[in-house]
Amino acid sequence: MSDSVVQDLLPSPTPVRLLAEDGTTVEGCPTGYERPTVPQLLAAHRKMVIGRRFDAQATALTKQGRLAVYPSSHGQEACQIAAAEVLGPGDWLFPTYRDSVALVARGVDPVEVLTLLRGDWHCGYDPKAVRVAPQCTPLATQVLHATGLASAMRRKGENTAVLALIGDGATSEGDFHEALNFAAVFNAPVVFLVQNNGYAISVPLSKQSAAPSLAYKGIGYGVRSEQVDGNDTAAMLAVLGTAMDRARSGGGPFLVEAHTYRLEAHTNADDATRYRDQEEVRGWLAADPLPRLEKHLRDVGALTDEDVRAAQEEGERLAADLRQRMNADPHLDPMSLFDHVYAVPTPQLAEQRDLLATELKAQEG
Ligand SMILES: Cc1ncc(C[n+]2csc(CCOP(=O)(O)OP(=O)(O)O)c2C)c(N)n1
Ligand SMILES: [Mg+2]
Image 1 (cartoon, rainbow, N blue to C red):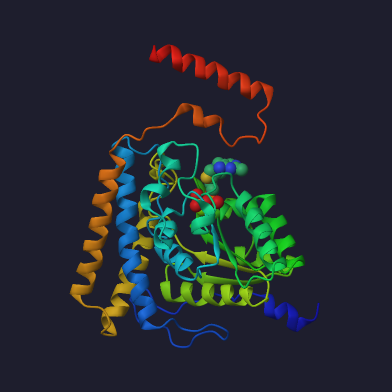
Image 2: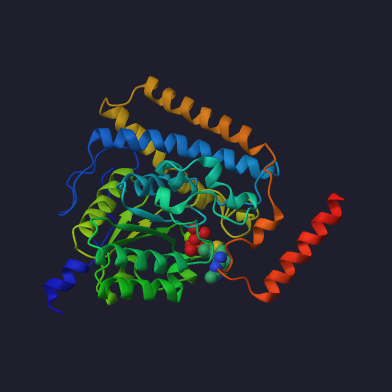
């Protein structure tokens, strides 16, 4: 590989940043990226306000026993909203359990988004209809699925791309490395977005990886890589947008590491005070992506109190509707557990199905 090819693959030495923490503009946009327009930032702001309200409501539903578990993405909204905003209608998203806000921003019905976390056996929505794969809990398996689908799209000559989301901890999984290798060799139109939120449950990144940046994990496979301030919505839109455009036009895979932070515990079932101190959390609260974007848009005269109120009211309406619909007991057919497992059920499965059917009949009688 020549020096210039290697240089083209390398991420910036420091994360790309277009907005400072106080909302002021960081002058100069690194070559190859375009600053998002004010209307794009306004659209992202509105979705961020609504997404944050959804997240708070989902957390409340766990306390009311209406959700089994909820992994919050509070603090990671710049990544979540940018991930939804850069998708075209034909593109696919491959999310993890952490990415419910991105699904809501993509337009998936919030009740459907929470179906799996409510304890059902399926993901709640029709993946093909919304072009969103089921939210994946086994770490890193979704990046291989995303790469395979992207490869198929390319073979069919489609002008579309796939965005695969993954956490920092999951980049240690073999599947992640296999996906990067396959994607590069087959020039698959897939963008990998690593949301580096500092922790894999209680394990800090320093105990997970010795890489100078997770973005460097792309170079060895020949994947163009970048690192971004993951709490800067403008930078996230610029870098992810470029990566997706490049993938759609045959430029191949792209790895983006977003430096961000999960402000809540891993899930409602975890006590984060046992492994990180409040001082650290307070530091990241100062880098919160929402006030940063809001301050910027107010400073440039693009956002008024009325706009903010309108977005908040939309968030309240969504939360009220979600509360109401999630409080209704769903009618679940236990027999549906056996549907779609195998095209032809195994004898053992057929036996279990018959046994359950007999038991249910006995209960009815
Ligand atoms: C293959 C596999 N191993 C272990 C787990 C248990 N587990 C669930 S979440 C998690 C941490 C993942 O951390 P990270 O990838 O950083 O994502 P985050 O939760 O921070 O978004 C682990 C180890 C799992 N779900 N799948
Ligand atoms: Mg993490």
